[in-house]
Length: 275
Ligand code: NAP
Image 1: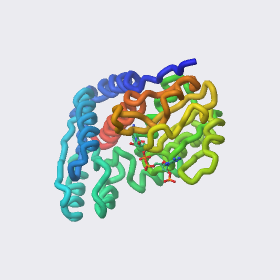
Image 2: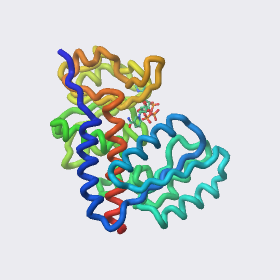
Image 3: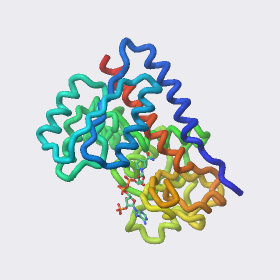
Image 4: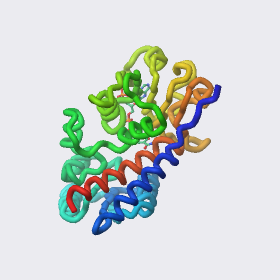
């Protein structure tokens, strides 16, 4: 058996079309500012992908590229000023040490990455608010690929604040109704948990963490990992997982495009609220 690939690029393109239609009805295009500190090459490539998507849907994106040694007050001043003019603001992570608090200077309603403490708090309480893009993109991809998570056992490997934890919250919310298990680097016998998953999510950051013997035959496997190797970009699952899984997201072309389009969707939502 060879797993059917879930085409994140195609699903993201469908959502882009829906966003484009909404944007055409606005008086002015939504505005997004992306703040980058330093020269991390991965950040530069992610910003390029966001910039291309913004252009396709009709969002005005401004890239503020600051040097590695920008002071905390200068960064905070920029964010405070952008709060006045922009619908959405993101600070591309990772930030140099000591600057992480700048994230909380973005007003919650402009926080289109969904990383502000207020938005994360709303998520915990099941209230409306900006949802983090990667978890929101995974949930959207599940629905749009015919994999309603209701009543399913979802095992998430990884408990980061930007992927694993918010995804567990989104999937276990009333109305979504999955049963969720979260594993991490201190989970013993991790394969035993993974093998019970109807939907298995790998968000770890190391290639080959999930091998075919850890996957229940026919399971849906969502590979969030982005690992740069000599063979190119690979996820967290080993190649032979596709012999056991029923469906699988490719890397690249799976979760990545969904993350970008959910960012665009958050910017449109922010602009509908404020304009
Ligand atoms: P992270 O903050 O480094 O978290 C990784 C998580 O994996 C941690 O909870 C860690 O456990 C756990 N872990 C590490 N080694 C493990 C192992 N051997 N077995 C089980 N769990 C293990 O990473 P992240 O930000 O969540 O990102 C994860 C991956 O997704 C990365 O490759 C990243 O590039 C990718 N990513 C992709 C997108 C996208 O749009 N495609 C978006 C975001 C992230 P502990 O908590 O115990 O340390």
